[in-house]
Image 1: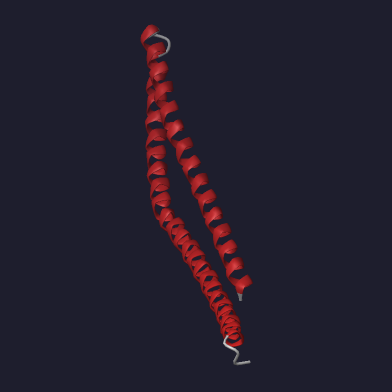
Image 2: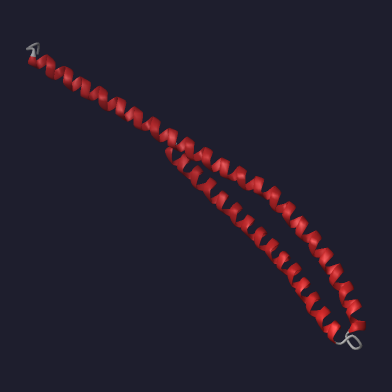
Length: 142
């Protein structure tokens, strides 16, 4: 039975680690999406500067570029919102895995304490018996 609790704790810890890795992957995806959105903003600003410097040559192409950037930015905003929602709900999964691991750890700790208390009780009974026999011999009753 003792091995079962240790195995359970180890499995719950492994599960928690896996969930935390998944959450980390989700957060990295979110960071990438945010970086893409910011890169689009920087590209738009750079293109605006080029269009302002050469209004006759670059100016007419800028409109199509700006429309494409606006559409791409809108798509990224939707992806970011979806990823944030996914992360928020997955945090509950991670919290549950953490709770399960802690429950198993506490159960193992309680089991170890109960075993130790039983061993201490048996040792005290043996010491009491030894003390009782020694007192009996001292009194000359044996």
